[in-house]
Amino acid sequence: MEARPAVDDAALGRGAWSVLDANRAGAATVPAPGLYPHQWNWDSTFVAIGLARWNTRRAGAELLGLLAGQWRTGMVPHIVFRPARTEAYFPGPSVWRSRENPASPNGTPTSGLTQPPLHALAAWWVWRHAADREEAAALVRRLYPMLVAQHAYLATTRDLGGGGLAAIVHPWESGMDDSPVWDAPVGALPAVRYAYRREEPPGCHSDSHQDRYVWLALRYRDSGYDAAYLREDHPFAVEDPMFNGIWLASCQVLAELAPLAGADPGPHLEAAERIRAGLLERLWSDGVFRARDLRSGRLSPVSTVGCFGPMLDPGLPADRVEKLVGVLESPRFMGAAGYPVPSCEIRAPQFDRSRYWRGPSWVNTNWLLRLALAVHGRTDLVRLLGAGTLRLVRQAGFRECFDPFDGSGRGSGDFSCSAALTLDLLADNVGI
Image (cartoon, rainbow, N blue to C red; front, top):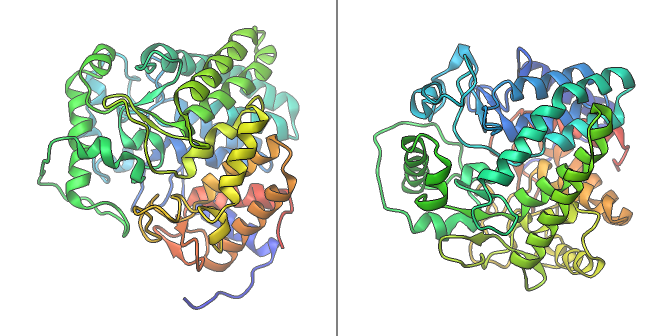
């Protein structure tokens, strides 16, 4: 790959704003025009985080626009469809049929799945960094009941294993769709083939794997998105350490935000303790946290970037933190890569530097790991991660993901999540 000229901080910031403005669709910011033309839960929440230090109102609008799609169960969907291009993406509203479900929001078509509950952490990030404290406090008060409902949904509907953790019921819910962690549970599903066309960026799974993803979503839809069906019959249920690490961190910051809403922080701290106990008891193995397939009862043999999610917990025992940091710095991850952080351990047979979530580095998971390391006082690695991530976007632009060895861009260009989080990193002046 031909290297780009060095980009200074000011030019990089202007470029990031240009991407975010071009990808804006009303109150929402779509991940990438053409390929991802709607509001994605995971991406939009990272956009709000990236905007928090710069534009409180726009960051708040991003979260409120996403939560306008919240179901009456408390579930926050993984896609909120924008009316101008409702069928510009497959599977679109006609597949999900959310409007047929009485729990769905009136007038807002959505998917029927969720994604990692990062929203309380995003609200806290906005409140923490806002110049106008009153405006930020007012935003927290508006968001608080929605966030409480979201956490209640996870606790009551998604604790399918009975151990205090939330289970994802589809790989799309992880935010890390094509991770090798899902190979075994997805491979156990029936082989199916659908006659549909969907533009996929290079690096996604084969059509047969994507067809199983569609089949799984249709099974859940045809149940009426029923909670009892998830417990008793749904063939995919996995306790993911990144999803639950994010949930734990969101519980803790929700406790910090509760007094602004005149609420008791106690229940959120109790929830964080339950999740921590579940993570340590159910997912810790061989020095990392591993995803548990509830249908087979097995832990994933593959270590991925998701294994480090529970480090977002400031209460994680120090000996577990040290072991995780050792794995992160080892040749399995950062020790053998030129850029942080490979999404799959390099020594795994499933590692592929060019395929989504099977090797490439992502700005959003780098940002999460950087926050986790800051929580535990590892300022050396905080700086290393921040500088390495900025080096990626300086060289290859605001790409969806990056080759962890040569830093070349992968996936979509002008990717909103990468641009927004670059703004947050620049605010910390971690560049080199």
